[in-house]
Amino acid sequence: MLILLPVSAQVESLNLKAKNYTATLKYNQTFYPGDPIAVRLTLQGKRKVKKFAGKSESVVYYTSAAKPEKKIRKARMYFVPSKAGTDDLFVLLPSSTYLEAGEYLLNADFTAFCSEPESFCVKINCLPKDFVTETIALGPRNTKIKTDTSPERSDQIKRLNKILETTNSDSIYAFEAYTAPTPATRRTSFFADRRTFTYSTGGSTTNLHYGIDYGIKTGNEVRACGRGKVVMAEDRVSTGWSICIEHLPGLYSLYYHMSELKVNVGDMVEEQQLIGLSGATGLATGPHLHWEMRLYMEAVNPDYFVTDFTLP
Image (cartoon, rainbow, N blue to C red; front, side):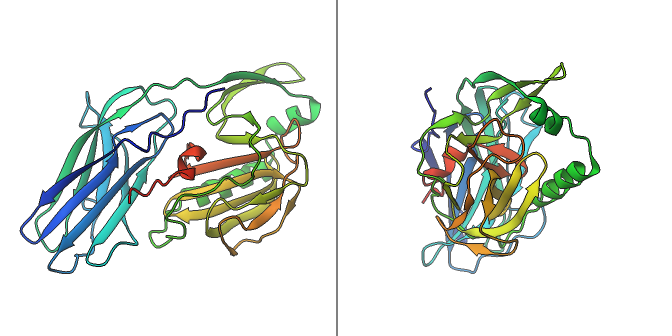
């Protein structure tokens, strides 16, 4: 199968010269559905940057070109490491895998150097992409897991959602290209597969596959894709032994179906640090590693992060 990697080469930039400073905006001009949209704002001036205050400042969002009044996704920019003499802000905006191909408008509103508010508005393009459609027959064990309505499973889902909806503006742990959690290259499922599960008891349900499945045997090493803080490490009904790592504000990586965990909640891990061993726990038709990336709750393409997404 052809895997469409992010069009990271399609980076555009614009300059704005204000009275007290110069601003340069870099952004991904083209992207596929499910890829984040990276935006970097570099400020250079004679006076210290005014810290942003209020949601109406330092915000980036995008809209349909046909309906510019309706914001699709928005997020607050945050400060990232920068060269001497400049202040850099950065943000990643998620896009849905169901986003229609076409033209969109990217807006960046900001206030800096105690000056009047300024803004950029640029055109970006979502390219067409086809996703895999598959039907998976579940045996009695997996049917029971998939249809589980127990308070235990509900509480696990609520706890994870609470983690994934948390945005810590100071959590700048890994601002560089990440690496895959395993050297394995065989993929048994792909990001955003459109799945239909059929039950052994009859009936079916449809789901979106949120990550990438690597076909590896039980006991293979699983390593952190980037530096970060472990915010979940537990055995879950659906995903078995699972880990969640925070990397950037609103950005988390997840690792599912493992046989053993090597880290605990609160641990700081480095890129490629051993965090666990692969397995087939939870809802699994065989041994594999599920690797997932979430950005402001939205599942986004993990392949995007193995290239330099920081727009240096």
